[in-house]
Image 1 (tube, rainbow, N blue to C red):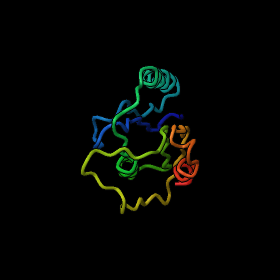
Image 2: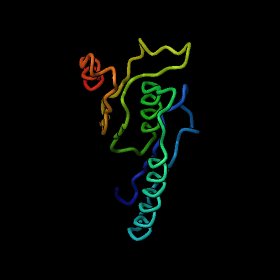
Image 3: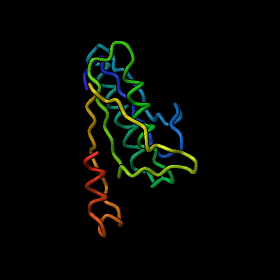
Image 4: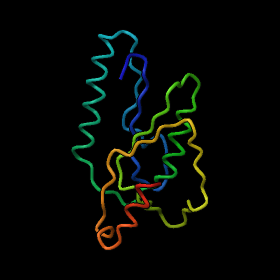
Length: 134
């Protein structure tokens, strides 16, 4: 995290991604001393969220990846990195379809930091491996 870098953290716990899902969004000041304070504040907001996070009814991973890629396509973005903490299992609201959505992520680095195993993965580990591979 360097001065001038832009970061945003969003939740993927709704049936539809929107600006309301952004928990923290900042561009660090070019001055290192000011950027250092901003980094601490940013980290504090994220830690506060993660301490109280609960499992969600919906996880629209595909839509959120689309939203993140659109956001990163803004002019001036040099490095495009999307970090994901999820079980990567789509949990869509009724009527939502993501089967034929093709994600165009060439030029992006997508990193899944934690892919939680589900109880159903014990019976069929191929499900877990399929989520990890995608």
